[in-house]
Image (cartoon, rainbow, N blue to C red):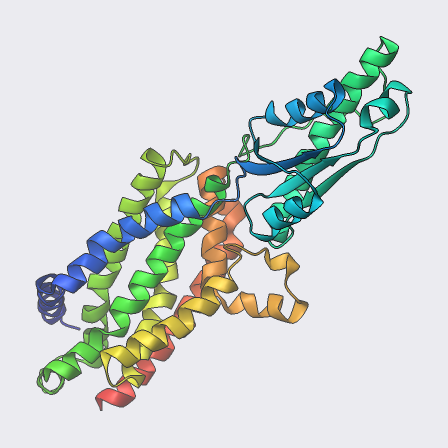
Length: 373
């Protein structure tokens, strides 16, 4: 193996990449834009619940109930409905997220010490958001009940509940960015390495330089190494840049080892670069290679646990996720970022990445040898 030939091929690849304005944008601009967009948009934290109130009682008690919602700083009363029809229209047109209907006898029932019904209407078209809104509503109503009972009986009333002292580890404020931003780092590395590698060999074919490379003294494995080294270096550089952005812009804590992060990235790149090279060998044009890349990217994304928990998937699909290197890479990134654990805990994920990467990259080399002969 001649490192001189490999070095010259690497130099040629960098020159070709950097001379194309579109490649420069993809390598240096798009990752930061995607990081900022995903970091702010992909967020399950609920800070603004729009509420419509239909108050038939119009008493001090009903106003106190409404004030208990506005005092939470999450609920915002945006509409006061005149009747049930207007309430339904507001929910139908998605102008509010939930509605509160207070009956005419609300105050009189409370003054008698009886249970007063309050109807809560929640837009359930987004079920995950609706369940969180219902939970917030239940906590506000529970607090209102305790305060009213204290005023009626002049003493604190206990319901015999468990006194739960809840402490959240690793993410005390339950900030969803702590969960999503490390995952975005992995997705960006995957997309960039997929797309750039998939068009690496196609570019030689379309430019008419493939035949010239074949007749050179370059061995097939030297050609593969020379083609992949630039994308490994670029991906590691992007990885470093987006990690810095995650730490200093989004203020995500990095509790673990940085060398372990980059080791996991190198093992993950074995799979993504191998798939990209395989796509290069079966595609005839750049457009075909790009479309095939997205065919792989979407299943990788959906079956990785980035958004949807793997445990909620059907059992057959859960077994399929073991073929997805992004699944293991996400676990490593999130655990190193938030928990700071070491190789003694994460070795199964590293082993899985090594096995998958070796198989995929070896298969790509074998496939390329057949096309080179």
